[in-house]
Length: 419
Figure (cartoon, rainbow, N blue to C red):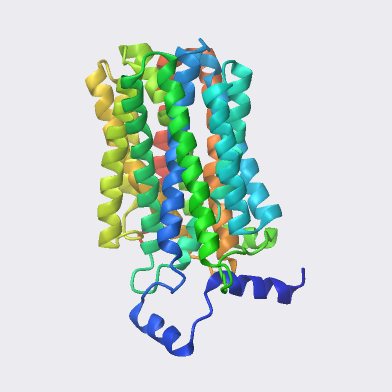
């Protein structure tokens, strides 16, 4: 592809073709571009996060309670989910390079994998296979969404796109565990897990229908946001040379080592140490995510992303892991989980907004992809580390041994500059 073709492709992604007067009005008022991708992106992000949050919590509990898999092996299933996610994102950005084609493929794979979980995942090998497939589906459908929503923000509130993206993430996180809790309470034993996977199939199917509806709505019209800028490694280097981008990248990397520990091991840890039931574990996660999405919504509506100090968020990371690691009773552990709602609400949108606002629009899509790699790399390595820790020190020492990473994240955050 020539340099001129790349510039033309990027123009298609950056802004829809609008009349000069409309463009002047948009620039003057700060209104969002006319493409209207914000609402569609919100819905797709909501569905995808509902799927990932549910699977990260359900799969460890399912293989523990239904298949009798040991705690030391749980990390392999989480690893397969995240490895599939990385593979899907690489295919989307490196091979398909089209928002609609990638999203359709991703949600189609998710439908198949959820049916597989529902009826055929009766062995550790089957669970692992469908976990990788589900991760691939999410990875195919998700990587373009944050950058495209960011481009729709408008100058009056430039953090609007990332803010609504983060709220959609939070809403998806709440919905998954709450529905899982209701289904696990209504059905006994493995029947509850089957019902959960069938529910997730319906979510995947709804996402597929939403993409088809979006594609139909732009049929015969100019569809400026169907293509993406090709992956250009030198632009990744350009982004990482930016000190503020690199700082946001590294802080999110450290936090992303801790997030899978809480999501995938929090329920199993509480069950092993305090006797928490699987149904109550889902309810606990639902409460944490509810607190998270309320905070995200408040911050988004106030337009405050970019003005928060990462050092404050870092302190909440340390506080939450300290309480969870050294809690003598279940109520205190629950308190630590609720404290974790603060960094869960703010780290990703805060760091992603900081990262994207520091780079030129010509490298925005590539920069967004690079930033997402900070989450992806840590979320793949974290389960591997968890497996090693559990094998050496046991499940009940997992949060204690991960506490130094929380301290490192706080120390790193102290060096952040405001804004």
